[in-house]
Each structure stands twice: as C-alpha cells, then as structure tokens.
Length: 387
Ligand SMILES: *Cc1c(COP(=O)(O)O)cnc(C)c1O
Image (cartoon, rainbow, N blue to C red):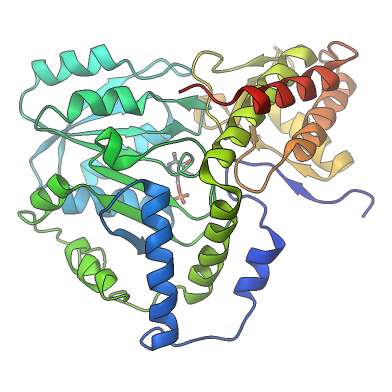
C-alpha cells in the first residue's frame, strides 16, 4: 500500500493503461467485419515491427507454442538442425526438436557468452546435412544478446534456415528480418509488446515458406500454411483471443507513435543504465560483453542468495525482480527492463536492490550509484545505440 507495485521481470511485464483499456471492452465476433478491420490494421503494424513483407501470423499460445509451430512446420522428422545453446531457452529449442523427432547438433555456449559466427560457419561446413539453425535473439535466462545479424549473414548464403526466438528481443532491439536474412522470427505477447501472456507471433521468409510447403506439420492446430491463408483474409483458423488482439492494436500504436528507433534507443539506454548501476552498487553484470537490451542478469556474491534478496526487495519496496534459472537460480537475479519500463522504474529497481543488498550484508557500493546510473542513461539517450 505504501509503495506502488512495480513489475520488472523479463516477462510478463507491466501494461500501459491505454492497452488495458483497449482490452476492457465488450466482445466482437471474430468472423465479422469489425474484427477483420482489426486484423488488417494489426498485420500492417506487425510486418513493420518484424521488418518483413511476409505475413506475420498471430497464434493463440505462449511463445513456446510459436517455437513448436516453427520447428514442426519447417522440418520433417529425421532432418537435422543445429542448436546454438547458451542457456535455458536454447535448451528449449533442443527439447522441442527432439519431441518432433529431429536430429540435432547441439553447440554449447559458455553461459554469459554470445554465439560465435565463425564457429557457426565451421559447424555448417562440418555438417553439410544441417537443414536449420536455431538461436535466441536474447537468451533471457542469462541476459545475453546473440549476434543474429552476423549469424544470418552466414546462413543466408547457405541451405540451412535460420530460426530466431525473438521472444525477449522483438520490439526491444533491432531485428529487421528481411534485411538481415532471417528465415523465421517469432515472439510472444508478454515481453517487449506490453501485453498479457497468451499470444505469439511467427513469420517465415519466402524460402522458409518454400520449405514449409514440402513438410507435413503433423499438427492440426499449428498448421501454419493454413493459418497463413486465413491471415491473408484477415482471419484466423480458430477462435483467437480477441481481447488480446485489441490490446495489441493499441500497443503497436504506442510503438509507432514513439517511433521504433526511439524505442530501441530507450532500450539501449536502459541496458546501459542497468549495467552502470549494478557495477556502481558493487555487483557484477553476468554478461558484460554481450548485454541483452531488455534484461540484465546480475551475479550475486558468495553468501547472498537470490531467494533472500528478492524477498527483501518485494517485502520492503513492492518491486518484483526475477531469479536466475536452473543452475543459476540462487546466484543470479534478473532485472527486466523491457516494454513499459522507463528510467524512473529502473532507478527504483536499482535503489531497492542497493538497499536490500546492504541490509543482507552484501556490498552497498558507491554513494553516488544512482547518479552514475542516471547519467549513463541520459548519455546513452543522447548518443544512441551501437549499430
Ligand atoms: C519467455 C521466453 C520464452 C518462453 O516463452 P513462453 O511465453 O513462456 O512460452 C522462450 N524464449 C525466450 C527467449 C523467452 O524470453
């Protein structure tokens, strides 16, 4: 009651009021003109967001549904794909591939580090039978940004398709699908897009559609060829989450009224601010060399457990951050700064982190840690993001 609730997790994220209100309306029917109008509007904006001339298909599922749909529609059981696995979500690609009966080559990347384009080129040469390469734009479990542009430059001159899980990256850092040569880009609603969970989005390149036409998805619900035909008629195969699509139409309006470039600038500035603030508090960012633009993972010193720290932050400041995942559950925390988060929210998070850290016997850092962080934000806003 004293403090406003603040949700700074890497999904779900807080919702702008105008998005909440856009969803708080009576139902419209999904086979009638009013809905088709919404689908037409959404489609134009989604293509712009994805940087593609191909259709972007909204699916009724969480992000993992789009990952599953992509693998099932692009590959036949027995085909081989390469997984660039740098954490929990990279592992998820491998699990889905195995459930589809695909063969895999799993390239393990040291947690906290980014995929190496030269290594990708070497692996494709070593395994000419590879039909696809799966990676994350941002590995959310460790706060790493993979160099998708460089990876795509390699796959686009070969036969293997590049599948990018952009669930925590689309709308957060630039990822123009057509320009970079990505074959499949997908995302979910509850991260950069400032919506509740429940929708995912997937787009294929022209050559990926060519491949999909030769594959039996083995899937009644996620048959993307059929879904595409429907989307081109402003329809969906099955009853969609209409309210979420109304919210999406509004959230995309917010994106484009600010301007995509400005959103990316803000995201980079938040990332720079988080890293600077975390260091000034006396803690270490987990992925300093390849920082994700929407989430910062922080390594905790020996003896400070994420469960205790996060509980302290929640109890005293009503602020929700995330723990690490898997082997990093207790020794990492993750500050989500994607979507509807601004410099003041992040300042609140850094302040709560500093005070809680100190209260639990951890470092308290430089007295001007907040000023340092804020100065970094405004400097980055002025200078813009690295290309
Ligand atoms: C959140 C996330 C997922 C999982 O999405 P769900 O919506 O929970 O299915 C997958 N990949 C990445 C990179 C994510 O950040």
